[in-house]
Image (cartoon, rainbow, N blue to C red; front, side, top):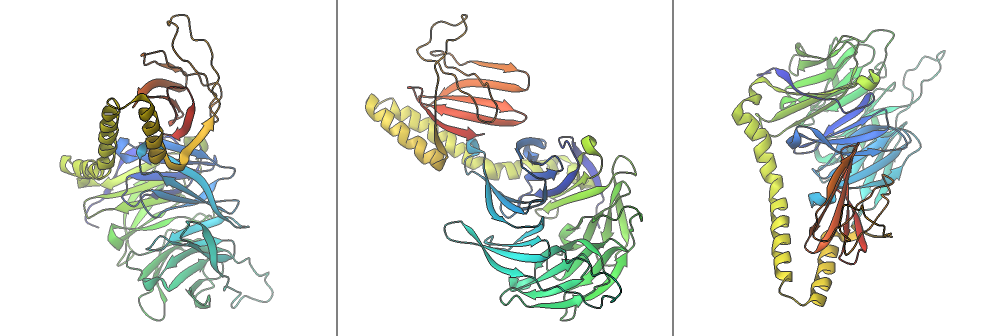
Length: 476
């Protein structure tokens, strides 16, 4: 490994132990799931400020992005939930959309290259979900091939629990790891499985290399096991000793990093450890606050040799949970900061610039049209811009504070997410105020009045026309 990693940033937002982390495909967004049943998204272009949060009925334990705009989470209740970032940043994130429900916790999610199929581990089975042309999801095949192999007759047979599934080259086959039943090779067309390695392994979590020729697994008994998948007959090539304490016995995360040249693994000893992929020797430890911390979630993304980013998270510290962001030592210089922030920002800012320019030109053109035609075009434009996000809400008129002159219109609305939210328009005034954890602002755009509400790092906006009819509720 050419350059060691150092802690570059620390996120303090999680309010409970972190169960899963995942970077978007460009590395801009970081999603985290914790035991407080909350899914959070952080934006590295904003110094990892939390830009969105969603509270579910049960904790998410697996996360996966397959584009920079689509995030999928698997819950303890067996739900597979999809969230979509809208093409215009003003619209925020659409969701939750429950695309499928299983009867067991969803422990692993893997998307294919085309992003139209998902490999999902739930209980004893590995399920393949397929997306139709209308964007609905259905179960294509259920892989339930593992069974007891060589188990002693006088022992109670352990449950079959799939802990990971990964596409192989060509995506016609996959490799499946089981907690007690070894490693299997499965044909995705026929569903037939062939036992390859085990069952003396106790595989907690696993990861596959970028070229799909090698796999690592955190073995709860022995440490980290290395598997060679490049030949017809798979073999376990070695074991890197990073054993847990006997009284801990939990699955620990592993990830390939540095284009498959190294592997990072979480531990229960207050650090994550990086191993060299060729010889399996330890090359660096990534220290957390103290030796009692469990590192139970990892995420990694890279875009070229000089744009690598790694995240590690605390898993047993309750309200003191932190997410640590690591980058190679020489990546934090001026030119690498520019590469890390400016170029990804430029690639995302063009659509914001075009949207703003379009709004400006549209508003300017409206001034030269009859009033009736202005209103029709305005409504048409909002429908085109906001699409199926449009919803109707009831507006109740209320008096305004005495410090303002009598306005031509005023309104009061109750936010569905945050009750007792007051906002108003005072003629040409643009009003804003702050109260506790809520921030309110009022303004106007292309002749429409809009209201924004910010709470706990999430903004909500309501768009109204000049007749005070609420057009839509927009997640910001």
